[in-house]
Length: 181
Length: 414
Image (cartoon, rainbow over all chains, first blue to last red; front, side, top):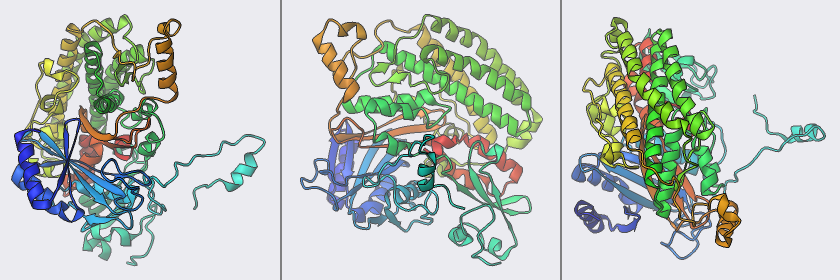
């Protein structure tokens, strides 16, 4: 951990009670969801982290949560929303992780700070069902508008298409979910 | 106008997108028009909902997802080696680059190093792929302006690059040639001659394109001052790659955080301050020349040696060892049935694709399959500035603005 990263970690520990996680030289700060807007604001304005590289989430459904919590995390914290924010002037990248409850996950949106969080958060709503408060346009983005469910959740089955042969073509055809008019 | 009417050709009701269009559209003063998803100049299956005042774009609402294939979900069900095959299918103009991004992430996760020869060949192939991707961009961009012949010239040169990829991997596009820990196998003997031939031919061809286009009055009038993207807006929207560099920000991951030995090569990061479509054209043209410089340098000092790491916990042994070594047989069996198991943890690794920062977020739970993989694709982020760039321009210019973003819909929708 270099000096600037240490300064950030220290500030975040004092201000937001952040925990630190380091793996393969990448520093991640673990924050409660309530502080995410203030944290991003501080990163952008005080530490020159001016480019949001990515925002995604991980579902720990039914897993022991990644060494951070010994109990099974089926409900809480089920999700981690992960941010990677890049600083071009300092040539650095820092990670943020926000643990979220699995029961109706909701957290503040950061679109007012990093504008490209817009589509990332729409994708998270689409794929994980995480709601972002204050998001200007929270619609599904890649799945069809009338899709039911959130495909990247771990309790969502992968699914497959049954292979039809001549002897059972009609039988499978009957229960095959064709696109509806 | 009844706001509950389902609009023609679209499943989205007007209510759902009311906040994205102006009040005038609801009163019927401006026209709502669908462009795509089958429109040829949207470069794939992109649908744009346009609000038009006469021929001027008032609002533009991109609708993506027509090419969504659930690659991230599918990768979670495959081992680390199997999952790589899907990475080719994301950005189908930058297959080698996608493989590289994925392999670097896996290598970072398991702390594996590729030998120097493998790294140099990776650089050669990704730079060639960058040229071929820019050639497709140039050809289609010129085609959008009505220059048909340039499209054919560009695809002629692109074919040379695809032949080289076919030579090394057996596939023109979906190569999966770069593997975690190195390459699939060493290059054939004809490889060097083929690349040298390309290095000899290509500079003259770029000059030819530039003679046709760079000072062409039609191109100048259609691109200068069109699709302005200011640097502060670009950064706010996380735009990367040639788009950002044409706005005057010299950010290139190959320079900023060199990977695969890019620090050994002497090349420049071309920037322009025009912020418009023409500036982006100039940046990409110069990038092709710079990529060729890198290819030449890498080929000149291509080291000899193995192309795969010999860490047997991750890389299967050569078949010749199987008959003589029990250890080799065990490793072979374990790696091809179960796969390797990285430690618990998550990494983010990014490379510079022809379109910008291509990042892979990879998380392992200690099992042989990736627990979560997220592709931070450059097109997805760059697309978001399209409405801002298009606002106030004519529909005919919108076609060029889509072209200048250089989107690949496979990259957007994943």
